[in-house]
Amino acid sequence: MQQQEKDASKRIAQHLLAKEIVSLAHGASSAMRAEKAHKEAFSDGTYTFSLSALRKSLDDISTEDTSSNQSIKPELNSQTLNILAYKKSLVAKAGAQITSAASTESAKSTKNDANIITLPDTLLQMGSFPRVLYAAGLVTSASEGHRLIKSKGAYVVLPNSGSVENPNGLAWEQIPTSISETDPNHYLIDWEALVIRSGKSKIQVVRIVQEQRFEAEGLSFPGWEEFKAKRAKDTDVAL
Image 1: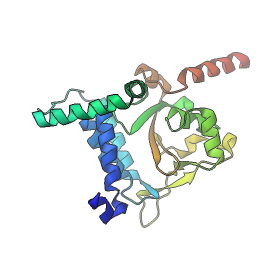
Image 2: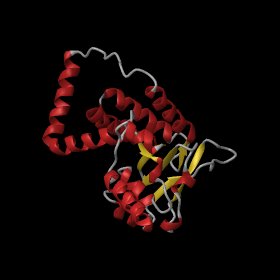
Image 3: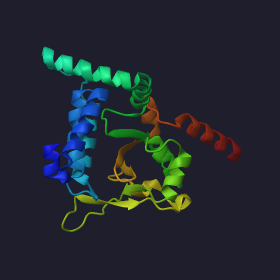
Image 4: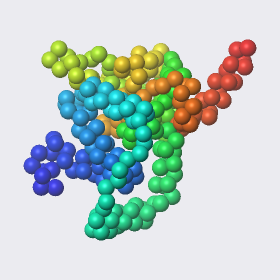
């Protein structure tokens, strides 16, 4: 806390807290990647998002997709093991059922990285931003996503918005309140990623893949079955 109070803008306490939480949920390796990604994402300032950090994260996932998942785990000494056991006991006391449910849902919808989730390209349609916010885990329902956008509390990173002085720092933009006239595809960065935000700091990077690949990898997201059912119903009506 003494380090935090010396310069609050460095967010030392926030970075440490985030790393500890991710470490408990996903392991130390994921925690270190999450901490690094969070720092890199804001390396160009609080009000911009780093394009180079995004591209690096996506490249890392592509590399993991094509490489072996085997890894060498370092040996832990008794003190480290005792500390880890103590932390896990605290999490269990705080609510083991909630943690288990959240971990299960996360395992279904995420791919390789704690900070990036994968969604199918068919989800991106005119007027679908509320559903995208829900699928990304930033809101608890599509209806809440709709209300968040209408209250001007939802944001998306704008592609090609870097300045001449800093082309790497992409700007945030409020998701337009004219929801039915807004197409999420227009905000794709490098044709494969959306970066969205709820409020001031709840950020999610979304990697977009073809639906065929999404299903082949056994992925899912909140509302996926309902989305497919509605699409099938609309197709039947059209026929």
